[in-house]
Image (cartoon, rainbow, N blue to C red; front, side, top):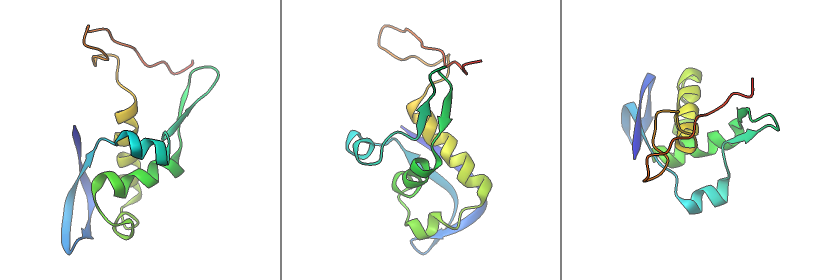
Length: 108
């Protein structure tokens, strides 16, 4: 599965001007090496770990780190949210072949 992010400000990568980033899902080996881009509090609240999410952006978009470093702050945030979504699902998305769903809770 890939997710597209239309960039607020285009960046250069591989001698091309990119207006859209395509982020692919991370592999098991990548997750093992980099970790999860979030923490879960004892109350169940999910908090993004930006230092981990930032490592995923160039990897999953297939761009050099130097290109990722030129992303607008809003694009970095949106990319981080898309990456987080690979690891979490909204209440309406199926989580197993049986059709069960697991809603996210905010801990509130």
